[in-house]
Length: 263
Image (cartoon, rainbow, N blue to C red):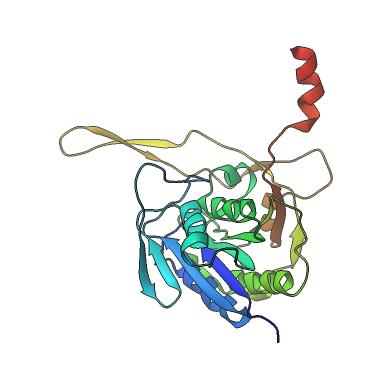
């Protein structure tokens, strides 16, 4: 008899996020789904871990927990201790469905990707999935999470039924275009693009005259690479689901020899 597969999921938008619930619902036909998500939104917390205070799981429902003031990395790290017997691990970790893109260098900011990073560090196949918006003000329910949920199911099923396509400490970073299911052109294997950033910050004053700042969001713009391979930003813009293999080894191997000469 085949063992029931177990999928551990998290996110960085918080335990009440519609994207998280859409992901859990989509993956339940594939096996047991355990949800461990931050209590509050933790967008752009990257692969951060809480070391300065204790953290507590709060049970919301069967196999559904929020981690009081924890990050996605905390959620995965502690869930492997709290919800699995010694020596046991889930068959798959999925982080998402994030509201907004995680493309290009945004991967380094992303709490969604951070959760998947912790998964592969712990030796578990991991996927980060994000629903791109057309612009920073767009309501996600203009098109919903149906396409992203379908993509998550499809990729999770492939992992659970066969071999994970990547080696150790490598994750799949998936970005879903802001289109309805019938308008999606399919999948593209991509590299991480080069985002165009601006120092977007907005100065305001409270009623007492004290200054405070809001950090803004960059526009969805990018630079073209010289190589022929399509980037995640280009693929999403053209209506494809972007799937990028991400390696946690960030060494710039092309520069090792030049650095040795420089020294």
